[in-house]
Length: 313
Image 1: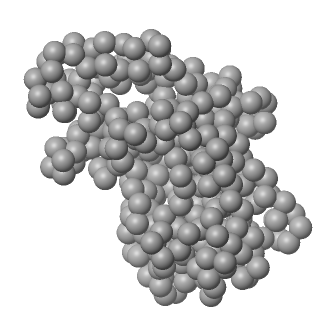
Image 2: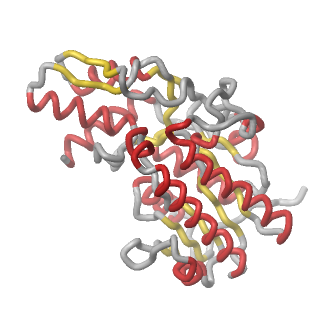
Image 3: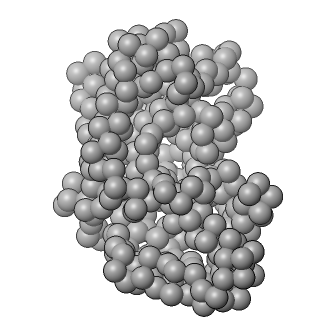
């Protein structure tokens, strides 16, 4: 049987977004594989929405892992649909095209769970990706990422370009984005409860009804999955990355309240949107294709994230 492993040893590897929350963990794991060099383009030097900058950064690279993105939680998605659609679409399109033109051997693109239809049968299977329109609040972001999957597949078909597309659930962990304007649900809640505890607030206001469910993947596990896929996965079909663990927002809120030691009340603001009703991935393909299974216990991951917030803020 032919070995399709793409060894990272002695390779020149570009990681866009390599200084970010996920990127730092990916870069740490790549360095252990003894690459020739790892390049991390910084936004102060390169604007990846600019095709010329994308052309510069890919020169001489063997592998591109494209993690750079503009994204955030429901509030950020509602406030910036045009920016999110444009930035992600343009960045990804230029990166894929310039990588192909530069003769890059492999391209790893990162999609999102937001690509799935609003009402996807649970657990979400990769085959269900095209069976409906995404949830409205994050559709512009999700559809931009979805078109990058289409572009990857089209380039593979026309040019034989080895581009793969991974779709993670929401990530969490130490070093996450805790900015209330753009953060995802876990860091947003941790900040609310820790800050409320410090201020002795009587109550904390949480968006929505608490009924939707979500799946979360610890950042360290996500980084391991990306590196495994870079080494072992070479097919056109997109692949889910998740933990196979589903929790309601209500249970998540109560768990974070308990772990932060906050003693006040919770007020649900039902005028705010819930987002997609349920989210849970079928992760069997990732395990079958490149041996990925998440390892981090959810409560343990939350404890580490809360500790990091206490230590750094």
